[in-house]
Image 1 (cartoon, rainbow, N blue to C red):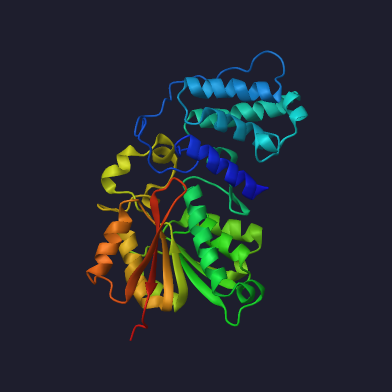
Image 2 (cartoon, rainbow, N blue to C red):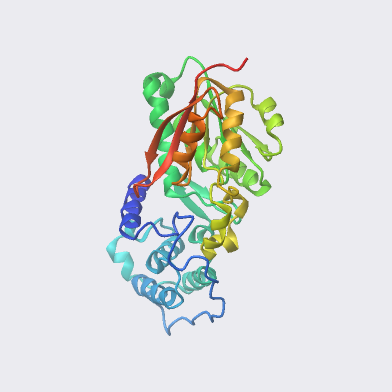
Length: 353
């Protein structure tokens, strides 16, 4: 069911132009505008509200205050209060049920946070990613739907090598490195799907490491996960020593151009860790370090899977063609579901001496 919900969400996103609340890092319409904090939380209407009436009430309030995706915001919050993932998962007759006093109070509390431009994922404290439900806490970066596609690319690559062996028990363990684990969405999704692989996940943020550990513990995946808090720009030598050889590297690194940071939505600017977004002058600071580290720790034919800014694939291909990372070849560019060049696949072609 959760995978079906993701597919339905993708269809909605495509129709709505991939708006920010659910995944986008940048949005052209109204981006960078200051949040409206001069509001008074509306009092509940007299008497109890039906579920559908409550959704419409808050949709209107959010629209009046120019909150992005007002209908989705209202639906997710009310569904969460009712113990459901989405309004669509409720039976039609439940939409006519009256909310209890405590439910009304909870809806008003959560919707007030959304009025303050807090992302829905933080408001409800969780979010689905692939087959998992993960806890979300500010300021840890919220996983976006594009990153689910990055995980699918890796899953398909691993399973295509030897689907039976990898899923049922490979001849050797597979170890990968994730750079910038955030909430643990990427590494935990792969560990959940493929029970014989092991992950090393690194992040400079203590909050990210702690949240990944918490999510891993809830999912029973801690035994195959090694978490390292370090800054790969400063601690690359230590990371190389501690990692040893890995089969592949995966990352959704900071890739926003520094000059574009002021175009981020208030939801991001106020609540998310901006260091997880700012990729430096050309958005390549961390990406280039990943390539340098990959030369040292990847096994022969090991791959690097990256989620990048749409301007980056052409730049990375040029850098590789100029020999900036000898031993690393550019294999492919994949597009996201909005048809933007979003994912880069690179490969190491020889063992370091």
